[in-house]
Image (tube, helix red, strand yellow):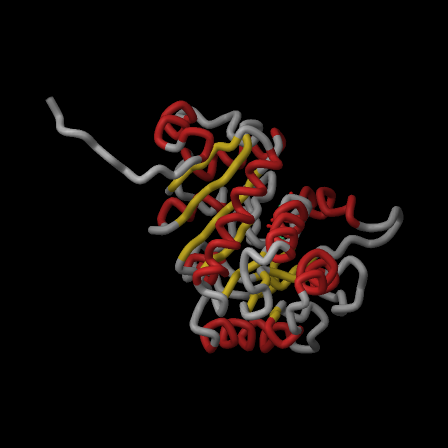
Length: 265
Ligand code: F6R
């Protein structure tokens, strides 16, 4: 697991956008796994800015989002379909046929989950999965106690997650209590994973993910078992890491220098 600690949230978000842009430059037809939430908004803004400068071709990639609220149609302003169109797909000019999200309003959610898994497989799997982390350690909407080998399915959201998400809804509006989410096993199938965490309110979750035991109590801790997982965080989110000095020695300011070891004398 690579731990990159950046000085602040803007530089952490830029580092993630740069990785995505570099991948899309090298492989314009890459398959990206995407996340929503407040953390991702500046990442998508930075990615759009890079595309506008011609850093990469933004219309060739395919995307699969992690999750969608159960019961919300794609045109609902709080749906993740809407979020992705507003924050990334429309500004990039990406065709709707390149983008995939599970349908939270599907009449048969189990069939929709199976269809979604199959669509990911048919696309050849995910090259780079972008993740945020919940304050309780969730990834996607895999709440603590989720099976570490789960596949796409309906999950009940914890009260804390519902409360955390209330800020995106109008006062008095009902916040959905269920989501259709990629499973932890689905996420782990991605060839590369980048998890971004910013802010002091994520510090305990980040510490549990990186330095705690691998446990369903902190679903993100499963990333310890992934061969190509990178955690990008700002100093605040890294605030509870016991070994931050080591991570900062290996990757000063989040840099990934080529390893050059001189002769041992
Ligand atoms: C949403 C998702 C969630 C969020 C997490 C953090 O697609 O995958 O796991 O990444 O809830 O949300 P924010 O960024 O709003 O703190």
